[in-house]
Amino acid sequence: MATRRRIDRLGGVFTLVGGVALAGAPFVVFKPNRIVPGVPLGVLIALHGATAVAVLGAVVLAGVVAVFVANPPLRLVASLGGFVAVALGAAAAGNAFTPAGDLIVRIAPGAGCWIALIALGLLAADALTRLRPGPWTRLLLLAAFFAVALAALAHGTFDHLSVMREYRSNAGRFAFEARRHVELAFGSLAAALAAGLPLGVLCHRVPRLRAAVLGSLNFVQTIPSIALFGILMAPLGALAAAVPLAARVGIAGIGAAPALVALFAYSLLPIVANTVAGLARVSPAAVEAARGMGLTRGEVLARVEWPLALPVILTGVRIVLVQNIGLVTVAALIGAGGLGTFVFQGIGETAIDLVLLGALPTVALAIASSVVLDALIEVAGGAQR
Image (cartoon, rainbow, N blue to C red; front, top):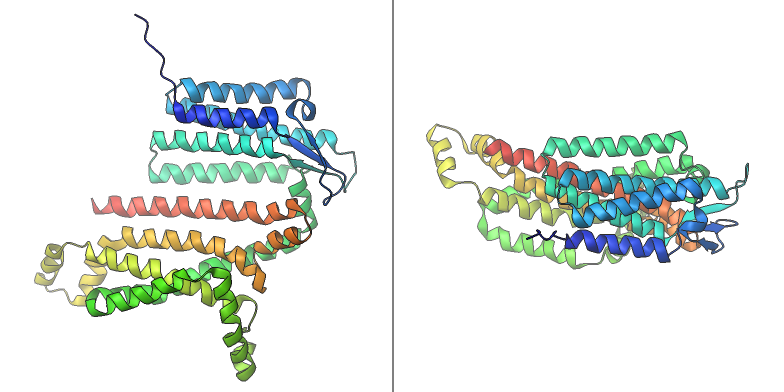
């Protein structure tokens, strides 16, 4: 009796979504300039001849493998091949429909292209999950992915796509805003670690403080980010007006100061709560053994409790960093800068390509930060076993 071939349901869903999007939604959108809606072009119109065959063939192959093949390495290779083929197909459409020397025409990836890329990316992520790579392998794969992406961008492969044209028009400002975005996200995290780790230790040592501190920090988390940014503008503005030194060091009602204070406030709860939880997980027997060896309370904390609590604390750090990378985008509304500047400028000008110029690097930064910290958490946890 013939063995019935098993169908992968998750792969079938992603394949169906990506296939329907490529068949029924625009692959690219031709726009005479950056603002007008433009003309949607299907995949068979946007791509011609061998290019169309290659792109569609790679996507069909990835779909067949996703549905009928259980081997994770093969699934990963097929999905990545389909992803690269769709991306290069969009680049080929940009090259084909952009007149030589023209700086105004915009060729933007359409809904079909974006949905297919997302579906193929999720298939690749699913294959990686099934492979269960170690932390160093994940970091190597992340570095390889970004190296290939940056090399393709530097080579000019995607230069005729609309988002890259927006980048060229804003290259100098993009570097400044990207640096400001990183400074706000990581600076607020550093401040939260400096304050939150000792506060977490204090809450662990003095249980009577725990409920009050965590309750207060939890209340801060309930305040919407844009509301907290607005609330902080008045007192910080008054402080800058009353104390000239505060104004000289950069404190003001708008800009980076209220953004940093708000991000710091949002960051405290995960840091403090995870510090308390991590220290609570440390075996009392290990602590007693360390004290029996003559270690002081400070030495026990540094040499026993901190290392054992580190994976849980790093989990809080990951939550904070990914959260802050997203919240910095909103902080652009109060003049803090960052990649959100392009997002809100693009919304105001009805220029979706400018929105993507700010949104795509933000998403990439958040994903990269999460992958790196997940690997560090696993390494820290493995060191304890």
